[in-house]
Length: 186
Image (cartoon, rainbow, N blue to C red):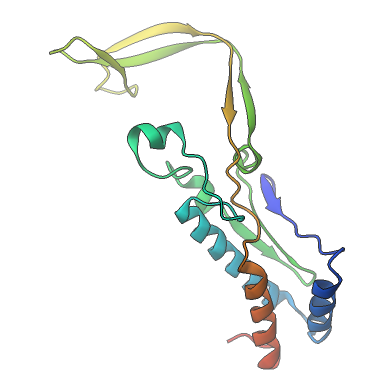
């Protein structure tokens, strides 16, 4: 999975490793339980996304678009939101996305833009004479070629992948339910 993925390393958590080791040892093929865990983690990720919070519970910084025009941060096209996927196997589950720009939103960073020439489209208000940016369609009444200088854009971290405080309990419950019904999911 390209983009961003979550990997939880429990090598220093002996209790969690012992519980998971004991539970998986009782399974012939734990792929189904890992699939269930993946679905639960994807649901948890989407739930936090809908609230605009990170796995730690802290709110995401609002994007400039949301501040100016309303809506939800990281939801203009919902491409990143819809791309959250899981990959389960006999040895575990991965959750992540293959969207190339996911990492900059997960971790934050600076995007350096080179200088370039561009055609800017405007709509002119006939009554006031003011201009505003417009899409390049029939509503744009004016187009101008302009040089856009080199600049940097800082994108704050808006972590969406990770375990929140309820996820470990959910994982344990899935394992316990799976084992209590003889290793079959209902």
